[in-house]
Amino acid sequence: MLVAEAVGRALAATGVEHFFGVVGSGNFHLTNALVAAGARFVAARHEGGAAVMADAYARTSGKLGVLTLHQGPGVTNALTGIAEAAKSRTPMVVLAADTGAAGARSNFRLDQAALAAGIGAVHERAATPASAVSDVLRAVRRARTSRRTVLVSLPLDVQAAVFSGDLAVPSSPAAVQMPDLAALAALASLLASARRPVFIAGRGARGAAAAISALADRCGALLATSAVARGLFNGSPWYLDVAGGFASPAAAARIAEADAVVAWGCSLNMWTTRHGALLGPDAAVAQVDVDPDALHTGLGVLGDAAATATAVLDLVAPSQGYRTAPLPSVRWRDVPFDDLSGDGRIDPRALSIALDDLLPAERTVSVDSGNFMGYPSMYLAVPDEAGFCFTQAFQSIGLGLATAIGAAVARPDRLPVAALGDGGFLMGIAELETVVRLGLPMVIVVYDDAAYGAEVHHFAGQDLSTVTFPDTDLAAIARGYGCAGVVVRTPADLGAVRDWLGGPRDRPLLIDAKVSAARGSWWLEEAFRGH
Image (cartoon, rainbow, N blue to C red; front, side, top):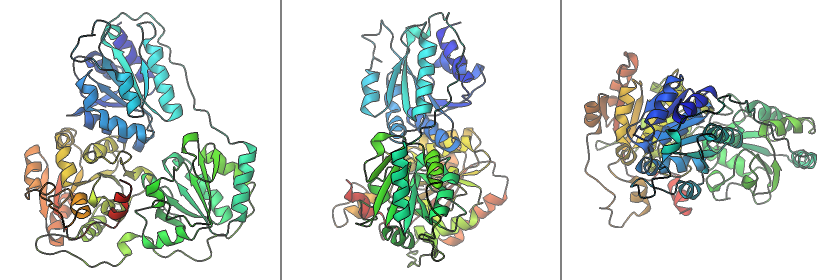
C-alpha cells in the first residue's frame, strides 16, 4: 500500500468521520483513501470555504476538524479560514499536499512552515515514507490535546512511496490539567470576599457548564458568556447572556457592578470587556485557562475549567452573593426601539424578532461579520452552546455561509440558519452550490443594505461611493442555484418563510431582506475603537 492510503486509513482509525476540502492532483489519493476507510468527504467549491467548514464542524460537534488541500494555490486559497481556526484554537488538522524533493522549481512550491507560523498554526511534516503515518498521528494528538490548528505538509514523493511501517493507532486520551493548590486557594479567597461575583465563560469552558454552574450556585455568582460560548448556561435564571459589546443594557449594568469577575476559558479580550470599560475599576479579576498565554489579567489560574470549578467548590462557603433579586429580562428583543421600517426597507431588529418567532427552537445559528451581525447574534435565540457558531476571531467577512455548512454537517438534527450581510454573502456565494448539492434545508438570511454597512456608518459624511452598490435581487440569484428565494421588505413578506417552514423543506431558502440602513448597529462605534 502507498503512504497516501496508509495515512488515510490511520486517520479514519483515529475516529475521523467527516472531512472537508477541494480535490486536486496532490490530494486525490489521500482523499479517496479516507473515503474508502469510512470517512465522509464534503467537497467545497473553494478551499477557503472548505477550511471554514472544517472549523465550524469542529466547533459544533466537539470533534476534530480535518481539511484536505492541493499543494500551492490550494493552500493559499485556504489561508483565511485556517487563520480563523488557528486564532480560535480550533482542534483541526490541515492535510496539505506539498512539492517533493524534486519540486524546487515547481510552480506550486511554497514555504508551508513559514505560512503556518505566520497565521498562528502549528506545522508538521510527513518527513519520510517510514515516518509519515506517525508524523500525521502526532499532528492529530497535538490538535486534540493542545487545541491547536496543525498544518501537515505531505510531499508528493512521500505520498507516492510504498508504506511498510506499522498502522497501529495508539490511544491518546487528553490529560486533565489540574491547577496547583496555591492557585485554588487564591481563587477560593477571591470568591469568599466577593459580594457581587460574575462568571464569564468562553469557548474553553465548553463541557464545563455543570461544574461552573455548581460553583456559581455555591457563591451566588451571575453567569455570562463570551459571544462564542453563547447558550452555555441556557435555562439558568441567573444567566445574563453575552458579555461585552453584544450585552444588553440590563446585562451590561450588572456586569459593570460586579466586585469580582472570574473568566473560565475566556481570554477577556477587548470585545468581551468593551475595551475594559465593562469591568468595574475596583473589581477583582481572575482567569482560569489551560493556555498560559491567555492569562493576562488579575489572578491567573492555569488549569482545566471543569476540574478547577469542582476543586474550588469544596473550598467556598455557601453565599447569596449577587443573587439578591430575580434578574430582569436581559433579552435584546425586549428592549424598546423606534421601528425604522419604511420606504421598502425593514428594520433589522423587527426582522430578527419576527424570524425568532417563526423559526423552530431547535436551530443552529451561524453568523457572518459586518454591521448587521449583532442582530441575528442576539435577537435569535439558540438552544445551547452548540446552537451558535461564530467564526469571528479574524473578523473576516465572507465566512458565514461556509460556517453554516460545517455546523449543519455536525448537527443534521437541527435547522441550520445562516445570517449574512450582502457583502459577505457575495464573497462566499460559491458555497451556495454546496448547500444545494448537500440537500441542506438551510435558511439563509441576507441582511441586505447594498453596501459595506460598517464602513458606511463609520465614515458617515464622507464620499461613500467606494462602499455602496446597486440594489441586487439576491433571491433571484439564489433561485438560479436551486434555492427557494424570497425578497422581504415588510413583515408581511415573511409569509413566504412561514410557508417554506410548513412545507417539505426540500431545498434551501434564501431570504433577501432589504434592511434599513438609517443607523449603525449599537456595537459598531465600539468595534472601530479597536482598529
